[in-house]
Length: 82
Image (cartoon, rainbow, N blue to C red; front, side, top):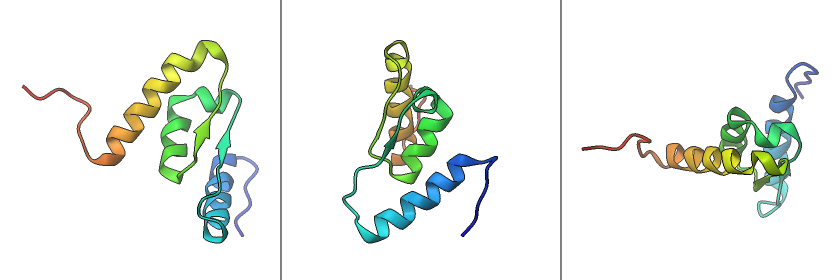
C-alpha cells in the first residue's frame, strides 16, 4: 500500500477505492477546510465521495464547485454555447 504523509488526498482516494470494493453503497465524505476547497471538491467527486462538509460561509462556493465538478464529469462544457 502506498503511504504518503505529504499527500493525504491520495491516501483518501485509495481508501475510497478499497472501501467501495467491499461495500459499494458505503457513504463517504470529508469535512473541514478541504470540504470547502473547490480543487478538493473536484477531486472528491472524481473519487466518488458521497458528501463534503464545510463551514457555513463556504456553502455557496462549495455548492457551485460541486455543480461544476458534476458538469465536467458528465462531459458537458461549463461555457455557454451561442
